[in-house]
Amino acid sequence: MSQLSVEKSMQPSLPQTQKKKSGLMRFLKQWDLQLMVIPALALVFVFSYIPMYGILISFQDYKIGSSFTSSPWVGFKHFNYFFNSPEFGVVMRNTIVISFLKFLIGFPAPIILALMLNEVRNMAFKRTVQTVTYLPYFMSWVIVGGLVSSLLSVDSGAINMLLERFNLISQPINFLSLPEYFWGILITTNVWKEIGFGSIVYLAAIAGVDPHTYEAASIDGASRFKQIYLITLPSIMPVVTIFMILAIGNLLSAGFEDILILAADKSLRDVSDVIDTYVVRVGIENYRYSFATAVGLFKAVVSVGLLTLANLIARRSGNSLW
Amino acid sequence: MARESFGDRLMVIIIYVFLSLLAITTLYPFLNALAISFNEGMDTSRGGITLWPRVFTLENYGVVFKDERLINGFVISVLRTVVGTIGSILCTAIFAYGMSKRELIGRKYYMIMCIITLYFSGGLIPSFLLIRNLGLMNSFWVFIIPSLVGVWNMIIFRTFFQGLPAGPEESARIDGCGNWGTFFRIVIPLSGPVIATLSLFTAVTHWNEWFLAGIYISDVEKYPIQTILRQILLSNIVTDQGGLDSSALAHMAKVRTITSKSLSMATMMVATLPIITVYPFVQKHFVKGVLVGSLKE
Image (cartoon, rainbow over all chains, first blue to last red; front, side):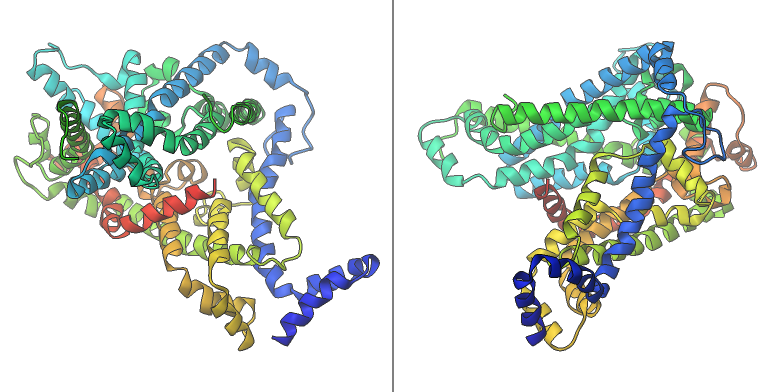
């Protein structure tokens, strides 16, 4: 007790010069506390900050085995090369289309699910649906990819069987090798995997709405749909806005694991190649480290710009995007 | 609520139907894969397996559990998940406890240093080159060391620690406990729910990770099961189009009644098993945990 009070009373009364001197002393005095954070900070430094420094190689011709600065500097050569390459158009189009579709469908889907679940009065049914829909979130993309390819397979896949049974097709379709189906499969699978888990936060926000509001509304004769539209939806708007800003910041992250898994077929490359998968291919598989880093940096810069812009718009319109 | 209009009742019916369909479409692929994994391989290729095996057999699992590569992968995955989760939760919690103390000198700068990493990163290639320069390539420790400290988890832990009642900690200090003693004897026992939640998420991440393992590890014997499963599934897709035979298929040719599909499905079940078994027990926790995480945003 006495130790604590002495420490507290000493701090504010010290004059400026003495305070600086005693800074080191105080630091050494709390060495056990510092020992809790300094090793962890060292790990953060090594695994997060050194790679940031490594971005320098996008302005170099990096050779394997050399350090991050000893390679020759080449300025914006790799960026120019990327912007002028034929892949640039394809990769940018796929990135934008896929991330836009994911945002357009994947963002409202959990909100709609939460609104629907909120209308369910049967608790056992509600809990069952929730438990089942959370499940895919915990499975790896490898497993999900396996399930999807089994479902869509030509010889005994459920989808082809179903379509044939109803005479909608005469020949089984090899869905996972035809470019025209890829975006649909990718988006559907993503929604399927994420929808239940994504709804948790919205359900929590809905639970915070005062039940009296609904009572008053129904006495006034508001239908259930009107109650959703006029009470539930506006109440969760702040949460929706925050998540929307975060989603916009991620707009150039069209995906990574899901595309690598679902677009295993090379014939899909024209519709499946996005910035992140392109970086893997040219960087890891073709060893063009400097070029791949430049492509990655380009994405990071645009993403930060998008995030800042989204935040700005949100702030201008009073924490709401509309 | 007594007078529900026709429109209201119709809407409720539509909602129930839609949610039932959603639950079925979520569960069906999984139950179908389970049925296929218990069905005789040649019979499966005739098609028509839905929710129940037609020709029941344990042979598929027999092959999985006899395949040294798969058993090895399973063991690596378990080791990686256990060591990685315990290590990461412990290191991150200690870090967070230190960061939760107001008297920590440099606290503000440390926090800024951490938060920057949430918005910027070096990206894949510089990280890859760093791992190589550190000599972590093809080592089990590449799974553990880079993920020992999670900044996001640190922030959640820190928020939780700051909300703990001050009483027990103070009395521990009066009894002569230092920061470390207080942390292990008082704070850890009080943090059950947050430790459970973050452990679950960390464990799931470790168990499901397959991509980095593929690029950082070159010995197949050191692959986790998800990476091996990925190769098996990939070889199926290739052979479906008349591609090359893979080692997995060559292996299966020895056992006639087993097809690549039945083997993949059995492997998939084995690779999902730990999550399926843990899931019901921790569901309550993670709903709370997601809220803890989202409140911080």
